[in-house]
Every structure is written in structure tokens, then in C-alpha cells.
Length: 617
Image (cartoon, helix red, strand yellow):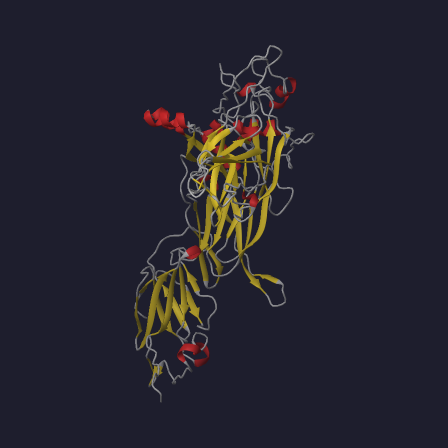
């Protein structure tokens, strides 16, 4: 809940006799998720000299923020200070210390909504954002005395082994204080992101964030819990256990340094004393928790695919905790703090707390993973719920849409095992590799594809690309045969259109075998002369008019006038030239595709010369 007030000081025009200033007041209470229009100028006879110091913000439990600067170009942060509260009968004021470690800030992000209209998005300094549809839930944890550092009352020991196992036990049966469903990735929707409530960040209790995928099924399992503390999210000491926790929860923590607006006196003092300490006090971190999928599958083929993915569950060492049972140790002192640790009198009350609701996981233990999805050409499939420590198996089949609205599936490929635990993700950030060896995938007689699994640079998660390095498009109107260097396999092309011939030019021809580089060269030979019926599928009648062809033959006087052409270098993107098949001359052009097909070169074979009559006769 936020209260916004505007006290616009305006000066009259010189045409008026009175030169006094008029104070036009405005105040409005805005509830969470709502908005209100703020009139900064209410009469046309006045003009505003400056927008500085005209807007005030206040939220319950904190002091009012004056002199809010409205800027359409720059985001800013404002520090919140708690109101003094009485403690006990003695009326002793105590300074509160929150458990999260985040100082209370309000972040104001200006956005241009319409012409001459500025929309101020006011939120907390920690925001949750997602790239897939999810549900989130925040639970309040019991006492964490067994996880505290020795000699410290507020700091936790994040270096303990199997720290994630403790969080899994603590969230079971914990009270739910905040819940939001249906957070989508669509930017046009209002629920694209969800700020973490201020009552959670400035609380004396520890809280955990839980994420549930909102796709396919309503009973999807909850991801591993995320401790909402500054040290856990930012991980300034680069603790390997915390990095693994982020990877198992499928999150990426981003931070941005923003200016902190203070009063005029403080701004002048910091400007005069420009030291490293003053610079840090003038700025603060705006943190974003980005939820990402565990696995990406990109279809870079010119037709849709049916994809099966599955994984077998096994015992994980993160599920074991060799200390005393966490839940048993928490039952005796749950919510019972000593007088020195009890700061609930200064903790903001959770007005949105869901009374009587507790969190329980939808699944007990581990289950095998299985999905069946259709991936369109150039589309990306986002998978969640995959354990990056276990191998993942995939099967691919070409998807065909029939005329009677029934889907047809062709033959499935052999299962392909992907060892995701070898990649340099958050699970294996030091010893892992950036990409796995490429595998050959034989989808059809004229479709030789490769499977490339690597680490996506932005989200640090595995991405699997199914693609064919070279597409050959025959526009000559003839039946052609292709021969690849160092391969015994032959490819026949009818030239009637449809899908191109897809090859990989590797030494390995068997499916699921490791791809080995070879010379990327092909040879072409015509099998039948061009025909009008075949060439018409490529002919542009609107630009070139009617097609006229003379009889052609591949033999003359009983002798063959065609032979295998010279080699065509498939990697020479951006080139074109003649292809001599003895007496027959063709044209070849090679270009690199873009977008989802950027790993593919398109080789187009066409007639070398086309004679067009531009005369009036």
C-alpha cells in the first residue's frame, strides 16, 4: 500500500496583478497492483517551473519520502526509514535488523506510457521475473540456529555441505505468507514480473521462495527452495554450494547499480566528498531473480519435430543431511526466540499473509521424468523439472500434418543419451565443458542432422540444437545425384520441390555416433534431362512469362555428355559460380541463413543461363 501526494507550486503569468504562488494539493492511496493518475498541473493559467520536490511517497511503517524527482529517462532508488516504535512497557526504542540483509529501498522505474504521459512503476529493490509460466510462493521459516555461524546471531553459514537438503526440510509445513499464480513471460501482460513484498525483505524472520512450473499439469513439482537473503542471492564469496543451489532452482540473479536519491543536504555533502565510501552510499543494488528453464531444445530444421525426452531418477547426495533432523530440532523452538533475537515488534506485519495455509510439496521423493512435445520449425522447446546431474534421453521423429486433421508420425530415431552433468553449468562450474561432442542423427533418407549440446551463455543452462549444416536446393528441373567426399552414401534429388536435401559431410554415417569432421565437398551428376513439368514448380510466371523449353538429352550419338562435376566447396558462403558436369553447365550459389537457422548454409543449384525475350515481337 502506497500513499502518493503532490504539492505543485505554480507561479502565475505576468499578466496577472498578483504574483503570489498557489499551492495545489493532491493525495491518493494506491493499493498493491493498482495505479492512479497524478495531476501535476490543474489549471491552464499556471505553469510548472520544476518537477523537483513536488511529489511525496509514504508507505505504512516508514517515514515519508519527500522531494521525489520525476525523470522520464533514469531509474532511481529511495531509502526507507522505519518509524520508531515502542518496545515493552519501558518504551525503549530499539533498532531493528532484518534477516534478509537487504536495506529497505523503493525503486522507481519511469516509463513513457503515452505522449506527454510518464508512468512511474514503484516497487521494492528485489524483483522476480520469469521466462516461462510459473507460480511462486513465499514461506516463512522457523528458527535457523543450527545453521548460524559460530559467534554470530544473524549470519548463516552458507558453506555447509548439502545446504539445499536443509532448505528442503524446512519448507515442508512452513506457513505461506505470499502466493501468486500465473506469472507469464509475455511482456504485454501485467504479471510479467512480481516484486518481492517489502514485508518479506524487511522482516526479522527468514523466508524462502518456491517456484512451480505452470505448464502441462497443475500438479507439477516445486523447484528447490531459494533463501531470500542477500548473501544467498548475490553470493559475493562465490561459494560453490550456493552456485549449485541456484542451478538446481533454475534461477539467474541479476543486479544493477542505481543512484540513491537523498535530501539536498546529503547530496551536496556526497558531491563535495567524492570518495569510494560516498559513492557506495549514493548507489545501491537493484536485484532481479530471473527464472529460466532447465533445458532448451532448438529445432533448426525446415519441418516440425516430435520430441520425446525422459530421465531416470536416482538418489542424490544433496538429499542427505548427516546432522540432526532439521524438523525435529525446529519443533521444540519453532517461532520461540530469545529476548535478544525477538525483533517482531519492529517487523512490518504481513498484511497479505495467508492464514491457515502451509506449504507441502506435491511429490514425495523423486520420480522419473517424461515429456512428449511438438516443436515447430525454428521454434524452441523449454523444459523444466530436469535434474542436471542425471543423463537425459531424447528421441526425434518428423511430424506430418495430414489432410484429415490426424497427426502422422514417421519412424523414431534411436534414443540418444545426453550427459548434462559434464557441462559447465552451475552444477559443475569448474571442471565442466562448454559443449558436448556433436552426435549424428539420421531422421530420414535425405535428412542427416546433428545434435549440438552446449551451455547457453546468457542463462548458463544447456541448449540442444538439432540442425543440418548444409541444405541443397535443386532448381534445375533435372534429377540430380550428389556424392559427398569420403562417403559411400549417395543422395538422389528429384528436383520437384519440397524439402531440400540435408547433409552433414562427416566421416560418421551411423546414427547417434560422434560426429567427425571431414572435407566439406560434394560432386553433382545429372540423371535425367530437364522437363517442363518439373521446372514449372520453380518458374515465376508473373515476372518471366510463359516457359518454353527445347528437347534436351544426356547422350549424343550414343555417347554420354555428362559426368561428375568438379568439387563444390560447401563452406564457401557468399560465393557463386559455374558447375561443369562435362557438357552441362549449372550455376551454384551458397549463402548462410540467419535466425534460428544460422548454423546452416543453403546451396542452390539452378540453370546457368535463362534467355528472356524483352522485345515486342
